[in-house]
Amino acid sequence: MNEKIRLINDDGLRVDGRKPDELRPIKIEAGVLDNADGSAYVEWGNNKVIAAVYGPREVQPKYLQNSAKAIVQVNYNMAAFSGDDRIRPGPNRRATEISKITAEALENVILTNQFPRTSIDVFIEILEADAGTRCAGLTAASVAVADAGIPMIDLVPSCAAGKADDQVVLDVGKLEDNIGQADLPVAYVPRTGEIVLLQMDGHLTRDEFEKALNMAIEACKDIHALQQEALKSRYSPQKEGGDAE
Ligand code: UDP
Image 1: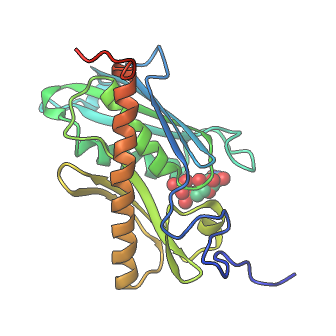
Image 2 (image 1 turned 120 degrees about the horizontal axis):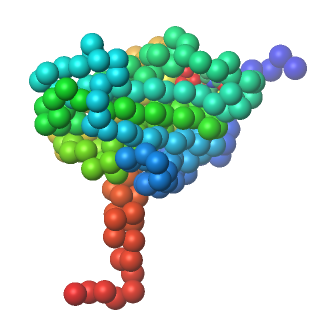
């Protein structure tokens, strides 16, 4: 009964059957809400996330207004029914932190100086949570910003790597998050090569850190392609059917 739970088996596979460098299945859809200026839905393993963007619009509250650029305000929220236990509604320290780091990541790519005195409001609703919601949320949010037609340098794919049973693994799952050794969420801008989000929970050696970071960056490049595809299929849905000219 007290036996240690193994996160990697003798075949080198993880508890959900993935290889160490394998992502969970990811599905991205752009433009899922009629009432928002831009929106996106992301299913990432068992995570289900909706992002909605409004703006650029008048700043509320007004004293936050910046005469040189738009401000980016993010509200990350886990639905009461999104976890195993009921999540208490309303803001908490974790949601405030995730909202802040997501806004900072988006500010790095949105051309905010084109919209002085306005606010770009981003709402991230976690419908189902299964570890990695900040990465799924940011991935969805940047597609929603693009869907709103807001100019940006690039989309912002995000993915975590970490450590479980002494091995570096990509896209940390729920059990790995709970009893694993480290979690390293990363957001990467492919066009500039910039890292716009980097957090770490747990311990990694320098070599492990570098391996985990590179793994997460490579995964971000794959997720970036999925983000682009989601936008392409929203705005040019009939790519098949031979409409060559
Ligand atoms: N979680 C939860 N309730 C909470 C906070 C977290 O059920 O109040 C779960 C949820 O599945 C989440 C996971 O714990 O995805 C890991 O949370 P963490 O704070 O590491 O953020 P995330 O990995 O989702 O970005």
